[in-house]
Length: 393
Image (tube, rainbow, N blue to C red; front, side, top):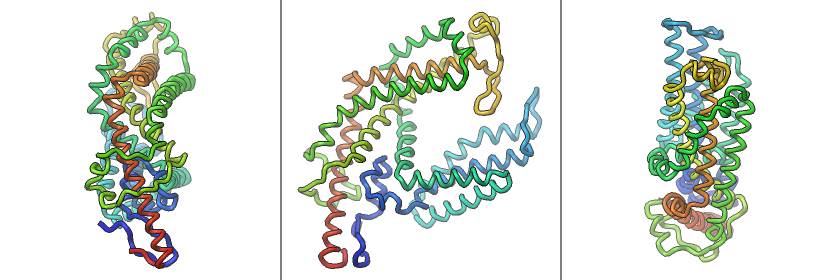
């Protein structure tokens, strides 16, 4: 593949789109130059814009059915109410499928056209529903996040979380002694009193506090773990072989590599920390689901009233009223945050966990840094060719 393209005199020549996409797909946008991060903005934004357009299509259907009014389902739902429930159930899966299909396209013109049509569809829905300003803000946010590189990091984090579903069993077994401790909390009367009386805002603050502690554990341990790697220019003997089949396979290894910039070092630590936190988040979500199901099985109105001194048979989540006690939802969310913090603290100091889960990530990142050095070396070579001959190969 030709990585250096001819450009007009005076313009900087850089490695091709395939190399840039390779870094973006691995959540390392700050390896690229600022100009490269903003390149092909419409095509790169198309999956998220198409997914958001799919969501707006569902919202439009809801608006046409309800006329913009609240709906309260009592007893057997009517045909229109069933249609509303179907649209609500399909919204997120439809967004995921549409975004995935668009992301699979490798044709830049096709993705650019999809992005344009998606913005047009979102604008039409905004005009009909009356939320034009909100839709414009969302579209602008998608473009800014994509161009700044944050969008690629967020997309990579989502892919990592989904890929870790396969390893959730192994991690859950290792964390089982810690997870079992939360069972003592689940059957604690005083915690149920807290869950029944605490407001949603205070619960969110408490969960954010616990998650912040967990993230601090993991980030600190990760930074110490990768510090020798990001400060060293040494290439392991087998690393170049791992780049076979990538856009960097034909690039030479440079002898004079620039050290990682601060933004690149932060990007490296962030990628590794988020990968671990994504694994732990999956276990925490599974824990929440387990205790939610357990609560629905064992909690009778009489028992819940005995524990909480009050009984509410419904809860409001994101504007939707659910037939689940709000104290049970508060309790399961709190247990999920506790589980997240417990496992993070254990993972930060567990040598066996590091060898099984973290070391493979570090090995893969080492290969990525070798690719980074080759990429920047090729970019520097292209600049020298432009300066020396006025053209690039």
